[in-house]
Length: 246
Image (cartoon, rainbow, N blue to C red; front, side):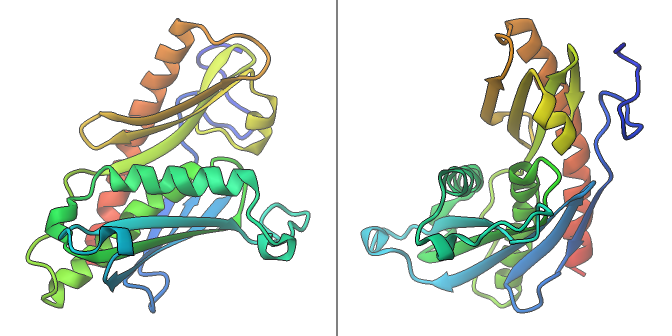
């Protein structure tokens, strides 16, 4: 597969799937967005309430926590709800911790004050990259939720010190590809999830070699692809936040 070859869905190796972010998708949430990345669709909400966990009380600092889940029909073949098994599976725990870490990295807790932000990401349809779509959409929900609080006079300014978005990438057939769908992800020699700030700083890189060792040059190629894709995602985030603020 050459650098200019098309993928099975017609994309270039460095091309994102079509991305749309619909702000205010859940009217009852403080902030919300529905993000679609190709065949992956995730509802992201931010619910913000007074008070913080007991261990945080009295310090004048806010807190953020995140939950992630896949609806039973999100993968085609029904996936049992975690509650029916009596516990969260390991993948769910890993992803919701990742979402929380990434968003906590751009919040000014002192400016937020003693309020708790609850982020919920619910996957409607899964075609690869659900954790990355969740992070990207959750940032929009978070920003809109904070803007709503400021409009209500509960905040004097937006307590964010950065922007965050995420994208998957990988090596399939020896070619670095951006934004893997499920078919590509399931056959990748290397797959990675990259989370970056608006100024290009890395928050987290998860990279796994499935069939062959990951070379340093391959990692560099993937990071270049991811940075370009995240620049595009940031533009989509900005547009959604602007539309949701009207």
